[in-house]
Image (cartoon, rainbow, N blue to C red; front, side, top):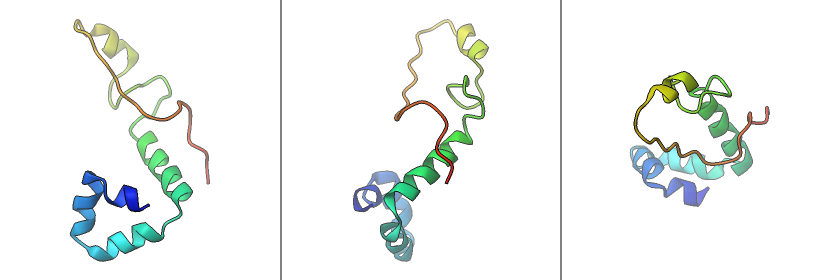
Amino acid sequence: MEAVADLPGWKEQLARNPRNRERMLRQDATTFIDTMKCWAWSFFPKEDCPIPDMLPSDLRALKMPVMILRSGPLGLPSST
């Protein structure tokens, strides 16, 4: 969790309240990952929707090359 807390996006947020950094460091890494996956899926409400608020038909309508970068395996997160 130390490496996550040191990531630029998290580091800035945690610097605002050092107690939050302590809370993050005490978290179970697997639980944290599962929570982040669930939050991410709130932006991807449909399995065939690769990015928020864009349907596959919206992407097909684009007339320029598009690259979508996503990390991790595809599929729904495990429920815990």
